[in-house]
Length: 350
Image (tube, rainbow, N blue to C red):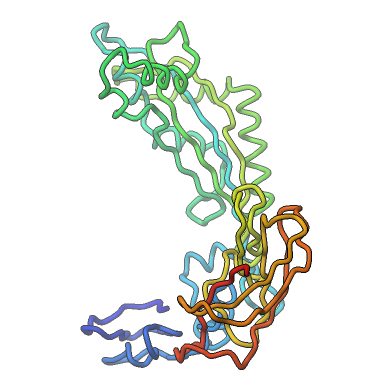
């Protein structure tokens, strides 16, 4: 992790007049990858976890250098009592805007209108004008993209029933006063609750009564172009919140996706199942979809070896979809000798 200019040294990392911190750069030791003038600060304390939030915390505690890129630092803003940045949730709001257009040229093909009525940048600037906040300071972010039928669909021969049904299904309601239409996907992203509410109220207002937005779009369009807007519709397509990494729920297998018997291992912190185990650590073993009332013995295997100890048992499996067993990896199990002393293992029912 560095925030300055790097010097190109074949096979090695170095920095030039900048703060640079490297932690657990593999393979091997970090020092093996560093050389040249102005060598970086080196630590090997970040590699004992597969949880990104834990890795970041260990790295930041090991150096006085701020290891966050400047734009990320600005976006986080708030810090806890120890001065560590508080990771924000991400809120995403998605709307579909349809702009209907007509052409002053009677020879204009309708299909050309259904993709170039107005530029996406023009629509973005109109929406930003209503929001009246600074997207450059990361108060919010906005993207406007083409939401039309992909051009590849038109490559199919006329009369293809499947393609005709597809076009009909994704086409907006026809406006008899206009010649064609163009669809835009508007996605707004924020992390501050007050900003989120302001944007949500604004967009809900557009959906309830789009007349003011319609007037603004129509009246400010370039009058010299052949295609001119003549109406709009807008609707909300979705709203979603993505929790920050430190608030993300730990991995737990779905009870609906997997139909057959299986076993998953999680650490209760990471957002995905673990792939390697560490001696002395306690894990949650999820056992799923075995016959009701059967005894389940979990056997630890290394590689393709079929021999191995029974490490946990379920005397009578309750067929409610999933059972949880806590298991602490013994410190006397054979390790693979790698730097982090992980044992690559799998569980199986015997």
